[in-house]
Figure (cartoon, helix red, strand yellow):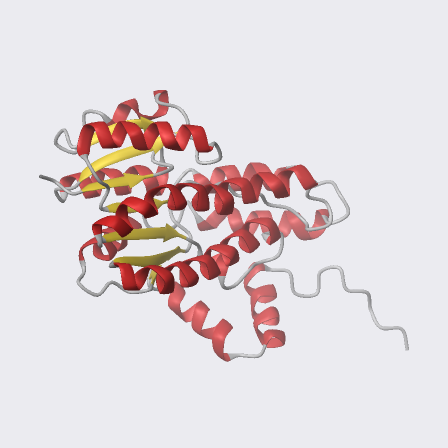
Length: 283
């Protein structure tokens, strides 16, 4: 039998590419999203090894129903790819409390909900793989990414604890950190930023938005993440962390090795924010 893998947030972008790639590699893929309508295009792909599945990661009853359907159709899960996520962008001061909660409900609590639901069967089987989709922003946060970046920082810590808890039970846990990827996710982030282009941070936001607008459209496609997921699912000793595209490894090395003040200045210059909003010194 094909090994069964659940991929959340599979209706577009990284999740969709991962579901298709894994199916072509021989996995039985359960591709989940809140709306089945958005998953219908996947039904005919992957050599008949993709099963669309309605699942809202913020709703424990929806998760339970989805896992029951998986159990009926394919037995125990071997792998879980926690990809479902949203991105709330904007100044920390101005992002409404409801949007902060929406950010964490999906990116953190939703991930925890699904993971907790599948762990008993993996632990009982003494095998399994859990792959959490984090972000480069989970290690180096640009301005106006406070809500999103902090949620991905949380996924970093969660993944470390889970990996150490589940190792003795034969379940391996990996974190994948995408940088800019050419998916619709960038357009959603641009829409989020647009809400703040007339506020107290207007000058900074407009500069950041112009820089950010070039990132996703000029990036590589989501297949690089799908390939990393496949390696994490199949390698005898999967990495604890994957960064893709590889060019972002240099950025993470800078963050790890240089003082924060220098990293701040480098980011300001790269984004175009150097000197913005700073009042001249009066002598």
